[in-house]
Image (cartoon, rainbow over all chains, first blue to last red; front, side, top):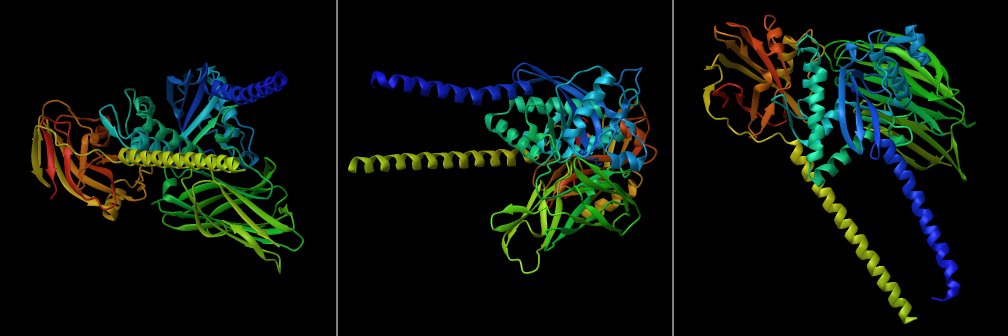
Length: 424
Length: 192
């Protein structure tokens, strides 16, 4: 190695150091934001997805946890409707300010704190929740973590059974046990035993995770990742993990997102099967006409009542709405650069009901060289275990399909679905 | 030229070895995760508590202050029908079967002796499947006169309660025993 190589070697060293710094420094920032370096306080919300709400489920328990250098501590949980967490001088009514579909349909901008998850996604709800929590309790937070009952069930699959107050809790009985603690069992003052039960259960799961063997820890990590992808676990942590906040994912092309809120039919939603059927007709001039039908199969022994909102691309024009059961609506509003079509629908016990919207769209086609490219992004609502998707794309006359994916009937989806058709 | 060819061949061999090692490592890791997951998902194997008193379906057993009699065991559709009849007004426990699973519902009569309140928790009833595993109670409903006692886990002196307890069990597994584990001796009801 000659002396003349020295500047070259220094330059290479500097480049390596800069590259490493570029990789490591953001990681330190992310770890710091998550509480692996330093201390962070996260708000918690357990969403009961057997009683669906827009962001995943009824707010059953709320609270907070501190993460100090990666260790969870000072877990506090409250039964959400109790208001015991609120400062005595403050009302737990919250001015939500939107979305317009909700405020216009229910003619109110005020809701109870524990009913405030009416936004279309967790990423919009979380900062409002954190702000309302700070007003009610004085507690500042660095982010919000949401988990639903499916998430709890999957975590127990990963840890194995745990014992809570001499009772064995497994993934098979946890959802029913949560409901028993919520409805039937009472604490010493006659209050629901839910927060006590969940607090002990959470501590046992945390202990099981901390004491697990390496393969058990890896299994838990894999489970958490899957739950986040399926939006049973939601993390709003500004500056870190932005892909886990359940945000509306509008992209170029066509878009469909059905958001349902159980409207007074209790723990029905695991017994209601949803099918979304989407037929779109691409016209010669590039515009399109679409029909979306949402089918509810209610297997419960009582009427299922749902306030359903369908989010479609901006500039959609509703042409027709058809229903097969009692309904109110449709109501057309606009949010997040999308058009929203809302209805209230009742599905009698052991029956099936359809809601169909027909609408026109300006061109959503994407440039793809010499070919035409149709993309449809179907977003899954947080809290729903799965839905069935049927899609049909009718091309302009004379067009030939080059490639298509996720077109057809009976796609059972537990996450978002990308439909794609390339044609010439 | 030959040296260069040898160097390329050696590099390719090293790259293939690294890729193969990574594939083997990932496959091993995946197998370990699948095994761990399958193991943790299963309910624990049943270990008979000692001491115990053994009876059959429809027979009473008394242990301490508690008399326990299992009257009936229902499975599948029958279980859901019975559940909806005893639970018609409760929309908070609709019993949603997990895919690949069914509910078994047992009907037991529990009575306390005259002296003193008797602690009783439905969660201390274990259903043993014919696969030899223990299944733990999901939800319970009592008759109108005792649902409050059931929720409070305390029976008043002389009180009796007709209790329906639901268990989630895998498809293909049949109930083999019902065990009340909190009494001394434990009460074992043999269903075969």
